[in-house]
Length: 253
Image (cartoon, rainbow, N blue to C red):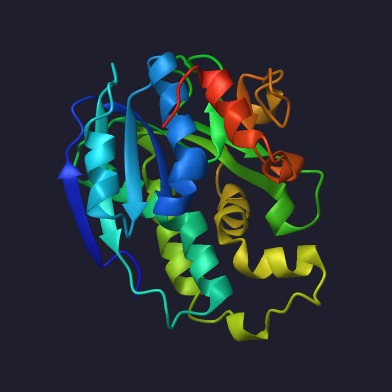
């Protein structure tokens, strides 16, 4: 059902990529500012778009960027897919495209991130780090044990991404998405459809050599001045968020 009709519009030239995914609406609202922030700090980007219009692709093509931007698109009929099942895929499709780029040997390093983050500086890791995960072992639920805002993977550990994809494909066969309702507690719902974090949390128990990104001070937070600013929580409710983002990255779209 998912990740079937995929086209690489432009192939990566750089081997080290920030990778994120979104649909057209989310790109216009948030993803474009992620892209601009990457351009501001010299991070090459691979953008995976679900059901983009030709006009949006043309707008992106005409952006004046100093970085290497590669793009893939996916056609997906969404009308007959359960809302939560579709949402689970939107969380995880960035791992599908990352896995493809690794399998085709088009990249050697990936910063796999949410579409709604802003880079405030360039992020670099030394060669000793092959897998970097936001890991919170003190939580007792799978959805909370890891964070999907940011994941760093090199080609030496690319199987971790493949394992996320495989586990996701296995889980969606058995999860009763139609049973999820707004009356459930948020954590209960998230443990069923928040499969980006759930899959990572299950797989992390098999990994013994990774760098916990939570050990980095002020790394990914909801604070505007952190290394990576996550637009979660109250930020999306701010009626002036677009103006705020335009001012922050010093560009508009």
